[in-house]
Image (cartoon, rainbow, N blue to C red; front, side):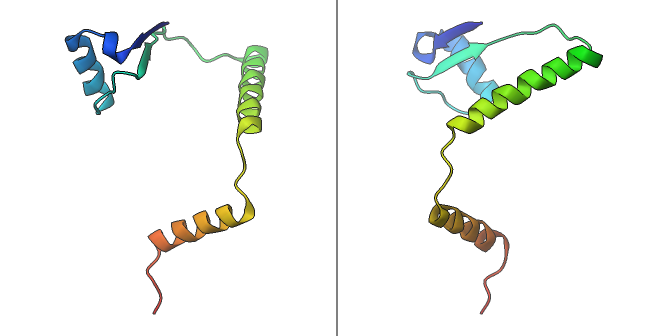
Length: 89
């Protein structure tokens, strides 16, 4: 995997990446590009092992997330509901 700071990229490379992403990049942002050969989905035990690795990775990410406190959650839900339903008189 190649990782580069955007400020170190050539103008043409930077423009191409910005066109793909649909936004302007900052000089201090990092860009990484990876390419994969297509392959069939795993089957049987390989599929189960892949699913287990994915679940482990997701559990790790979840354990690092900070849950909102009760009031933050309530405020977020209220804001979301207010944005999708008309205000009552």
